[in-house]
Image 1: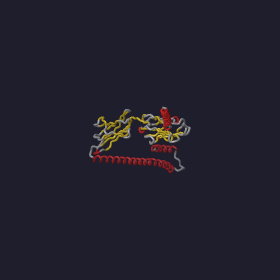
Image 2: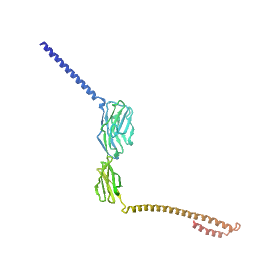
Image 3: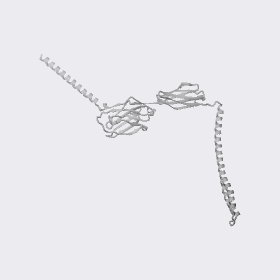
Image 4: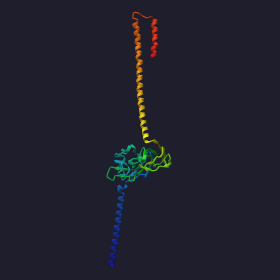
Length: 341
């Protein structure tokens, strides 16, 4: 009986020790989970919107805020924005703040259109993009780097999508030669959303053009494969923001190929001949005018000199003409000289 009581007592001790070991193990597991949760690398975070939309030509703001594991950090830091993809995409903006300074000195701004709007010291990396173009559309990723170990940097993985909207604009319209002496027309327009293109012209009416395809995501091209009649062909591009139009004209020679070629050659030669005759005529006229001016100026000088010389020779210095005679001669010669002038 006493042995039975001892056995039960030993079993009770073993159960208590097992309970004590389990409690100790649970407590240790709780401590380990708390340390993992408090690991500095687990307390980095970034908040960015999924999408930002703005019209071409205006400005857009890409918001980005972050948290970091340091309670107070006033060391050197660098703010970076990439485009395309995280970690490997090309940088479009970068600035660096010195220790204790809230001013982030810009080191890179692509085309000078990217400017930091937020304050990295206050966990704000928001970026402003000026003079938006359709090519600026895409994803952007913000990143911050602290001076320290490899864990003191963080970059957004999903980024923010910038959507640039624009009314349609026709960037090219042309007529090109096609097979079997035919012609085809091409029209390229851009816009966001990508515009719908339609051709209108002789025998076409208003019909949607075949052969549409996108180029860079915001460009669309439409082709008229065969132009059967001469006249005006108009391309229309439209989306929910507006529409645009452009036209081309097709006029073909309907005579024989040899006659049309000969007519072009004769026309070119005739134009050159007219230009040459005009130049020669202008030169001849200029020479004639110069000759006339020379003839007008030379005789006047000779007539003035000969008049006074003849008077001196006919009447020697000792003999003087009556005063009335001299006045009549002067009156006679003065109108003639004035008329020549």
